[in-house]
Amino acid sequence: MSAPVVLALTAGFVAEAANGRLMSGDPSRVFATVSTDSRALPAGEAKHDTLFIALHGPTFNGHAFVPELVRAGIAGVLIGTELDLQTLDVGRRTRDGADGADAAAVIVVSDTLDALQRLARAVRRASGARVIAITGSAGKTTTKEMTAELLGARFNVFRNAGNLNNHIGLPLSLLELRRGAEIAVVELGMNHAGEIHELVAIAEPDVRLWTNVGDAHIGHFGSREAIADAKAEILGQASAATVLVANADDPLIASRIGRFPGRTITFGTSAGASVRATEIVDRGFDGTSATVTLDVARPDVGRPDVERSVSITVPLPGLANLMNALAAIAVAADHGIGAAEITARLAGVRPVARRGEVVALANGARLIDDSYNASPAAMKLALAALKATPAKRRVAVLGEMRELGALSRQLHAECGVAAAQAGVDLLIAIGGPDADGLAAGSANAVRFADSAAAADAIDGLIREGDLILVKGSRGTRTDIVADRLKGRA
Image (cartoon, rainbow, N blue to C red; front, side, top):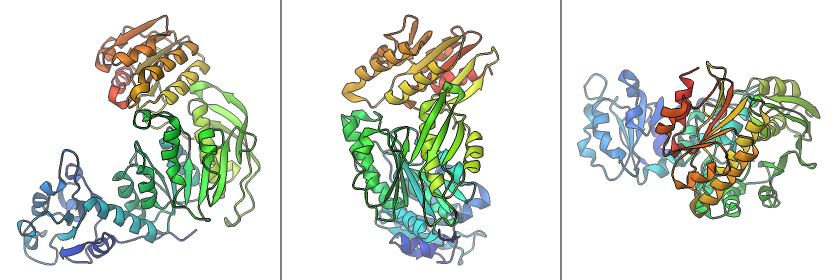
């Protein structure tokens, strides 16, 4: 692995990498931060170290904010040709109000989004960091956090914040590699075909991790097979040196990875998986434990092969998170992380906010806040975890799921059947007509049109000792219900 490199993000470097022209300012001026959101810019003196990139959005044009930012003393702006440079008066915009070399750097490009992506790719290449990119229908963020945690045993690891995983968030994340990270673990998100291809071209990942294929965004694709084809774009633009880490238990993945040109490591419960879990104990929302056998050997890590077996405890809910852990273990073992480090670091992993977060309430009830988002496959897994968890009474607060297209009613009804099979004692369904399917199979169900109404009623519906799952699409805002319950903690 290359030694980490700390890069100075100078105006000259930015102009060259972005295929632009430096129209004013000192080429050696260093930018400490980069922003595309004028509302999130640092206040006071810190603004004088910031490069602002003016992007176009569906409801805004970043160029509208540039003149005021220059007047306020911004260090530099990256803009398109549409802005009249004469309106900026950059020569007078210095820290002391006088003309001079400290004037704002103005970099002009033909397309600011393309320039951001070019700049990110240049920083990624110059940094020497090893990039691990994760895609899949569910579990990307949790797998990212687990992978970064395990690799952190030996490496300086960068992980992209939250889910900054699109055509803007990913390049902004990659710019952070200038600070000397040895490894970057990033997500690649998509809801249309072609997006993963574009993100791979920006990140140029050394390791590609494919978690699963589900039904998220199926309304845009029409079938899980089409979703798998779009996710399979992560296999492209690879070489013999590229590593693929893939789910051996998912037939839609297994059928698409045969021609990958690099080395493939698989994970799962299947007999042929490189990283395989056996002796699994599923405690639902109280976590899982398993014995994991490892068949991972990489000759260039400078150490003996990793141990062949490791006993793990994953303190995150359900079998889905065991699979996420296996994916992270596969990457870690391939980078020389040993059994003791894997065991210790996995035991300390905690849920990402609103992704299976467990909160004890004052009345002895427990809240499982899984309200960040939902797809039918993920909802079924959450309900299976609810079933596997001992409880006096199981309550499921389920919100309508979005972007399911013509299959929406069918998929909601399937989740309703899963809720009944999970032994849910009280089902609270939230949303429009499609949410009726969530409640159809339950003898004790309550319907609300929106999460605000459900939150107002929730105190009268729960009891001492309840186990309460809250899950739904972001658009349904089931987090409102979760937050109302957290007020009882």
